[in-house]
Length: 297
Image (cartoon, rainbow, N blue to C red; front, side, top):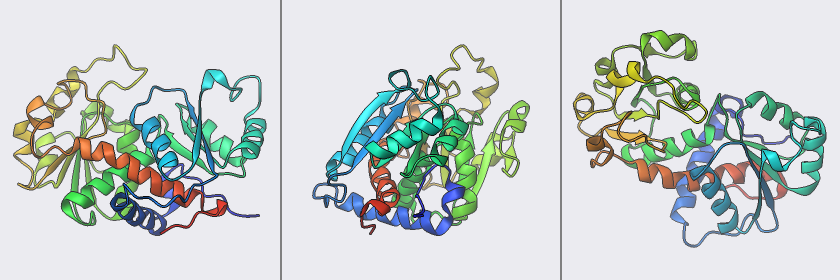
């Protein structure tokens, strides 16, 4: 049986493969306005149970710029997790499309679906991880600062799906990662993470300062007082290297997790980072769709 290239967690894909995908993303960005139609005749199902701007647009444009097609559904429009079993849904979707991208809360359901498909399942985001975002982030870092190996990346604020995936990436790409989090939530971070409660120490000598919203979708009304010492401010940026960049996967809660001064400064690469979702997604899709006849690199 042909192996299916699922893209659900970075650490199940492997370092060499991820580095190859990243190299392909750099190359595909250079071909942005004249891309080869490598997805001609292929279709991607895109399933959402969370609002989306960058994930939906980047995947849909990636498929269409390279000659493919998309069908977009939300969870209320299909039977997944409802009156039809995950197994049955996986088998049915495998007969209609060439790949499935899901942006959903439940990672266990996504992993279960992948067991019953003969086509790739791509994690567009779950409550546990966000691998496509981190690939775009690594693409951005390498564009701005060169090879990510050996760089110091400092994360500030909450422990969430993005920081979880940064922890995975740090092991695979061999960079230093420090999570600066309020002490009371240290237990929520991955056990193998390098964690501190000292934001200034985390920022010291860093190449990249990165944060995310303190209040994710579904957490409206969450108390944020404990996070204020971890706001990425000009004072915090000043402790990093002179060449340091600021990153945020967006959307920003203005001006909580980052000050307006930093978000709009020359060090901020947030919109380059957002654009790079498109180029990273193209390379991820190309790898996932290898068995559909797509040539990678």
